[in-house]
Length: 142
Image 1: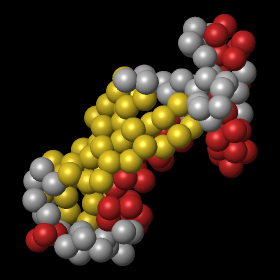
Image 2 (image 1 turned 180 degrees about the vertical axis):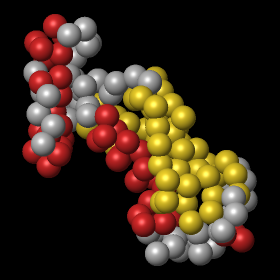
Image 3 (image 1 turned 135 degrees about the vertical axis):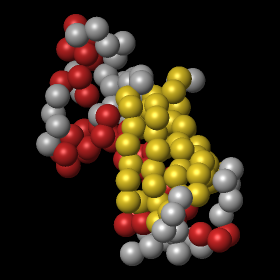
């Protein structure tokens, strides 16, 4: 499948609609159940601190998945994403309170490629720090 966005209608520098994604401890529990990743750094404050973390942190794959939603929502078809990669730079720290953490994601078209594809560069922030580096997706457009 291809995206609903037309290749000819997109220019380098086109900004995708930014989104924010809340993350609570309950979110992490649900993700652990779905993914099978029950590492205690994602739910046990004492353990997380003992291994040198500031507090419980979100799963890296969860953070990646939330970030790419900006691209899939824009494209209109998740299958239009043909490549996606990131480097983890900082963890998303999730305090045990009613607010949790917020992952803020922005993205823009960085290059037009061949075969109706574009490269989209993403910026994912939490707590004022970049949590994903080199976050890039290749999307096949209509």
